[in-house]
Length: 441
Image 1 (cartoon, rainbow, N blue to C red):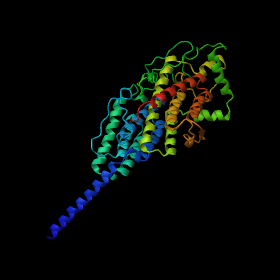
Image 2: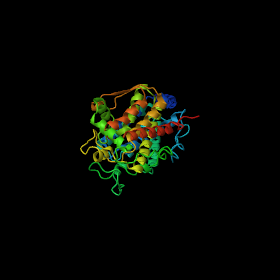
Image 3: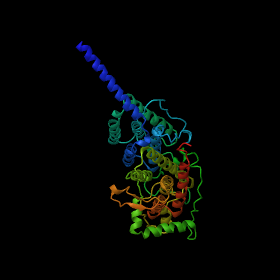
Image 4: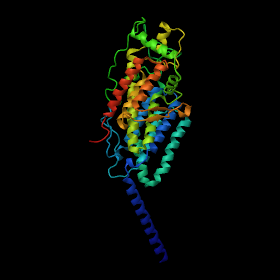
């Protein structure tokens, strides 16, 4: 008799516990992405900024591509929990399908996003160090431990598997864009540089230009690399030529740099292998705005996706232009026509001059952020605080873009025209990204 009573109590306890688990999970399953903080998104993109500078081969184009696909992955892993938004399947170039959620089933969206980011970042940074791989696994574990006990085991497992399936589909999508494993192909040995008078020539030990075929890659937005920029000035040596006047400006500015101009040049240099590159700087600015505005996870995913896609396409379009025109760098022209001993403030990178990659990605970033947060948004950029560089203050995103473009003139890297045309092209690409229908209706 006593044993029967004990069994009944045990069964009743199990039913009560099961009932409460059901109630808690049912309530939790109703939680939308917009109810979560931006914590998981910020953590993964901040980790990427550290991975870029410490992973071999992550040149500016390669880094921009990784940020584009990781941004898309974040967005797609969450969009089914964002009723106001829709998937970008069918809206992006050749992006045809992703796995679907199970109808009527609950999902914990942070677990999905967390798993998706861990998978795509490990895939995109496959050549990174064991230390960095450990950091990826550790970050994944942090969010799993924090959130998987908030729901039943089935929901947790389902959410994680879904996130991984989204990331796998997007990584498969990335493989045929022309830039797969680009970190191993920065300087293709079979490339034959264009030869002739007044074309790009190596300015250092590196004889093969960086990523000469990058401009042939598939863009996220169809047509982003099909826009032909104005033809750059002819490379005439005469003092009355436009090319000479542009080079003379670079030379004169470089010889008379103010302390402020020097600070600007160094702040925006974003050198590969030392920093997170220009695209990483764009993500850094976006992260600071997200933190300032205390955006929820849905808006954060939109911001990171748009910035990543815009920066990636800006680099493809820019690189197409560079190798279409093969314009020589200021240091090459100045040393043959103005001053044989001249040296620019910054090291000249090993690829053609026209247009400016910094200006292109800054223009695209400024356009996207202006569309999202307004055209007169005051902010402070602390991107290089850890490197001891003073923050920069701006009254609009286009103001930062102009400064980033001009920084290349101060550094002796680009002619003014290259910066101006890069900005224009970047803004065009930014507008194309803003016109994508992220939201329904």
